[in-house]
Amino acid sequence: MPDESAKWPRRGLLRGAGLALAAAPLRKALAADEPAQAPPRWMTEQGDTVADYGMPSPYERAVIRRIRDKQKMPTVISTMTPLQDLVGIITPNGLHHARCHAGVPAIDPDRHRLLVHGMVDRPMSFGMDDLTRFPSVSRLHFLECSGNSKFFKAALIKPNWTAQDTHGQVSCAEWTGVRLADVLAEAGVQKGATWMLAEGADACAMSRSIPIEKALDDAILAYAQNGERLRPENGYPLRLFLPGWEGNTSVKWLHRLKLGTQPFETRDETAKYTDLMPDGTALQFNFVMEVKSVITFPSPGKDPKQPGFHEIGGLAWSGRGRVARVEVSTDGGANWREATLQEPVLPQCLTRFRLPWDWDGGPAVLQSRATDETGDVQPTREKLLAARGPNFIYHYNAIHSWRVAPGGEVKLAV
Amino acid sequence: MGAVAGLFLLTGAALAADPPYGFGQPATPGEIAGANIDILPDGTGLPPGQGSVGQGAALYASTCAACHGERGEKPLDATMRLVGGAGTLATPKAVQTVGSYWPYATTLFDYIRRAMPFPAPRSLSPDQVYAVTAYVLRLNGVVPDGTVLDAASLPRVRMPNRDGFISAYKPGR
Image (cartoon, rainbow over all chains, first blue to last red; front, side, top):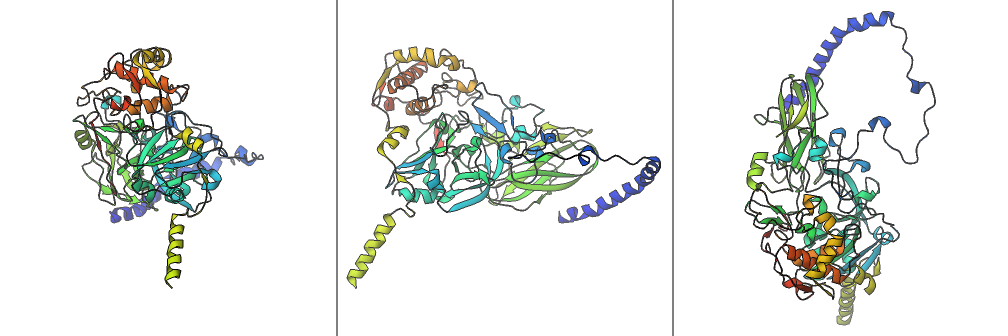
């Protein structure tokens, strides 16, 4: 594989040189009687002033979060990140996906408190000023809704879905906050406490039970993302952040933690966010988001315009740790080549992969298959469906396929 | 020497029990009482009060039916369905409702109290929450007509899918 990538610059150079030779006479002929071109308008007048808070160029207006499945209730929200339009591994804050069960609460940070009670020595109440005094921690992590790419049922799939529609409920940010373990130590977790209820201050007081091991391990009480305070839709002023776990457990607008000896059996860990298996039983507390990947170029709406060199690119991630490798197939899984991983490759973080591709202009089926550092490999869709049956909704992580038609149009292939 | 060591041990023990940073304030009883709304399956946390199927029927018609459907079977959106689906969980077209899927009746009380009615959460009294809980359980055939629920009887309601859940959580993996 390294040999294959090493060939590319040379071949690209040769091809470029050939093109330049062929095109050179034509350009020269045009130049002979062509008048000097006028400078563009923006070089002939003063530009705009700088906004207090900057926004993208108006020419990037189409790069926005979108809602795939419109809900009857406008405050039951599921927005998706435009993965196909982004580069690098960081999701800009305004494009970070957001799942809200009862709208976005307008919380006054000066009035927001975090209550820590239950099986603790000292029930405590913390204001934001108290919390930000603890030693800070800052980590890059993906956040994925467990319902991301929930398209088990072929009947629900629409052929015009983009990468945003199929995988846009994963985003990645630098999360800054304090260690939950430090804050819990202030209250003094009692021996025997095994579960922690985390509750949000939204209009459904969204709540989940978290095992104490995770709470004391790598859990963060985050107050910032990508260098600024959390966006309201992502939990302002305070959210729980549990690296690698289904997004719903990283409770937003966090206002209460209660320690106990058993799960609290909330609605969002019984009626929802549980996985109904073929035999009619359901998996509960299925927390980890397993290894997964998606190709973002080429992808629907991002067609290769002409045959020749293209760089296939995409994102891979695993809730169990680092991405170890990503393989890419252009023939529907018959042959695989190992892609290059772009640094940094961090645990529980989006990782970008690239592979040079000489498209012959013919039909192709593009797939990516990620393996994480624990050895977990993405399953095929067929294998996943066979194992999980027809009613499974959450934790879909199958190998994903895009079909490239001879003209270059890319569509979802199932 | 022994006295010094003893003093050291005492101080050490006292330090270990002290909060490491001393940030935050002790939570007040009123602060805890106002926020402590979770209900455990054994009924821990249920407030005083009671409500009947009949009272719940009237309240449901005026407060819940517009979204969840007159009898909880034909909601605005399939995800809001409350009633039906018995015996479907192991079939290709599973219908997951309070009656067919939810393992604990206490969760129904907990969720109605914290999140419903959708336009005005936290507006129902404990009596009203008991009543609507009773009526939704009645619609599902889980309790009979005339049932009155309170902190003692609600945890004793056995849901049809009580044993249908398996924990996938394994510490360290």
